[in-house]
Image 1 (cartoon, rainbow, N blue to C red):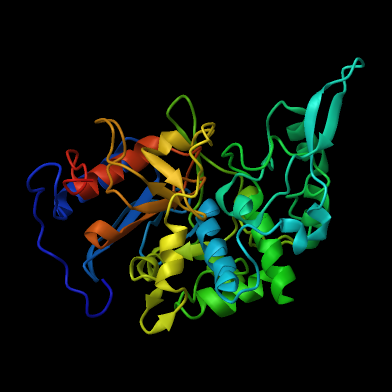
Image 2: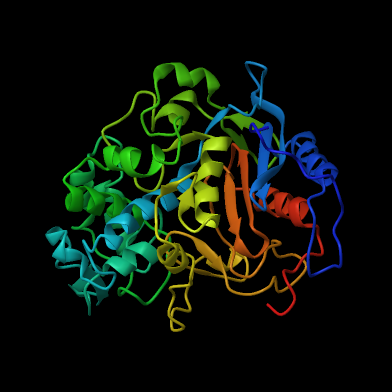
Length: 413
């Protein structure tokens, strides 16, 4: 427990669908079942509510082969939970007037001036290309409507992305930008939501606007002011002994350890690439400090990271009603998308949907890590696990354990 924090007494849900209290025994049971069911080797969860810690527990093993338990100081690969950190860094520069949200991206990154989209197929079977009908804007890269690919897929644009290898860890961000700017878009900018390498473009934009290395900027202006002292892309070598192993859950229900080389590729040793969309290693308390800053409207322990109005902007749905194609985003629940966060825009629509309150914002990572910020209940939660591929059932279970299975959010949502 963090010094000075007093846990709330364990209580059960009250008045279904309106409010709740943290039930420690219920969360403990859920975490234990995740491990006993072999969906995770080890898990941990940390919850703050009303300005104080109300729950922490870790169970299972961070490393089965070494028989090393999951602990509070265990470090994990947070993968795409890096993305909101990148978004906060870029929005600090927006607050300083360094760009406009609806400015063409090419105003600051000229290599993106002429982006192509497919215009049918020629008689020879080869794709035909034409310039996009409008420029990619900064807002597009903040809300995943730019049209960039992210790997995989059968379209000509996605195959071109795979061939160009923009996210190869041997690339610098500058080389990444050169490569991805020469790859056609999957769709016209602004017309669809599609998860993409856009957040890595955000990282490149931070470098171009500041003249600093992206990693250096984030350390100086986000991580250090928040006291996230053990979070980074370049952890010291001795941190490796605290890093959780990642396990692949097969169709046979067995967990198989991911190859160590793959687990360590982002950080040990640090490669040329500093991705905006992944790569941070963090302990659970560090990431909770980031979440607490957001629920506190941009401030934590006297450090102002963002203005309250900027946090509200980031946590407001940015998708136009005409954006009806949203890839797998609807699987996250009754949500839209803000600036590097999913945003809940209504109560859960059925009993199978993840529990949560109107106005919450959140994101997760490839190894099933998750955090969310629930302003209505003054709650933040961080959930750490290292299971691939992403396990929706674990996310469902931790949310139900925190809220109770009948929770639908405050009345009148």
